[in-house]
Amino acid sequence: MKLLLSSVAAFLLLATASAHAASDADVIIIKAETVVIEEDVITIVAEAKTQITLIQNNYDPAYKGQAWMGRAATRVQVKSDKATFIIKNPRHKGLEQAWQDSLKTAKALQEGKPVGRIGYYAPDISIKENLIVSITGFGYFYQAGR
Image 1 (cartoon, rainbow, N blue to C red):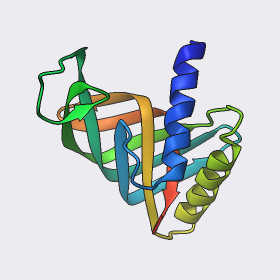
Image 2 (cartoon, rainbow, N blue to C red):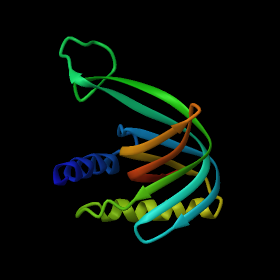
Image 3 (cartoon, rainbow, N blue to C red):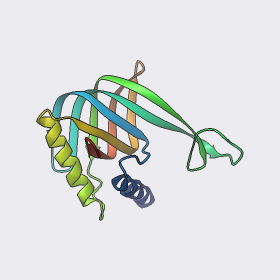
Image 4 (cartoon, rainbow, N blue to C red):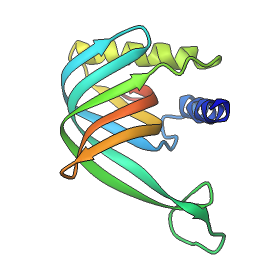
């Protein structure tokens, strides 16, 4: 578990360095219906479009297509007509500012302002009838223009 949290923390640190960092799931909010901000969780119910990176479980040095950390990868676009997006506070030293930025972005979304995207790292994704119904995990909620 500690290794998983360390891996997630490393990805989040990379994400805070660049708005174009690769993440496992990138969510663009189209229209938010509900935004709830709590101490350690941001919950958004919204219409959105998401790009998910699917990774094969084997490393193949001969593979020449899209890859992620040496593994064959496929990126797919998935629509959400109405889904729940839960962003958890990573509670990891060094990521406090990333969480504060995510809270600030969530408040802007509550006020109806345009926002950037949510970059999730190793999230739990539920898909029903080919639409995303929920994504839960550690992530970074970017401000527009970053």
